[in-house]
Length: 185
Ligand SMILES: [Cu+2]
Image (cartoon, rainbow, N blue to C red; front, side):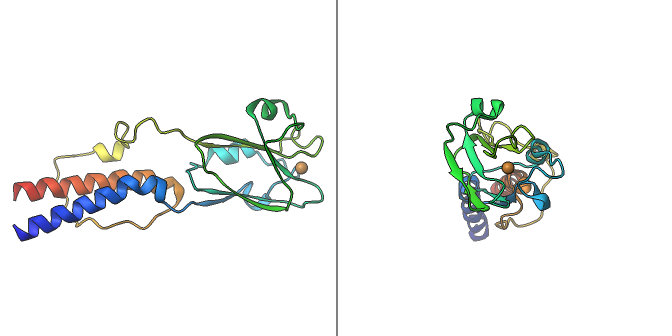
């Protein structure tokens, strides 16, 4: 009984931590354009660059560029679409700007130097709005729910942004399995 109680308590702690994890997790750092940085040279496809990332709240977006030739403006969706630089929401000019994403939804950035946005120097950082984490589990969490898992749950170290959510669901599944085993034993 003592063991079962301990396991149950551990599981509850882990589940509680996990529930809070998406908002607490340390942000990943993404350098826009990777090695190329923020530029019009080399035809970097920033749309494609962003499409390969799963941005989360707290992530840091780094724009690295030569401040003599470029800047970073955060703009509205309308301005982003038309490369209108007349009324930016905010402007960064250091050449090494770190912007922490603190709200969900789209964050539109472009270079305000004439012609650069038109040449493709624009990026949309989208942090997906969560409808319900519980209602949409990853497919891996649904696999073989009747098979007992022998491992003891341990708190995972935060991993890369892409694996955070699936790791969370796997942990939840593991924790629930132990809970069920504990209740039966
Ligand atoms: Cu530019």
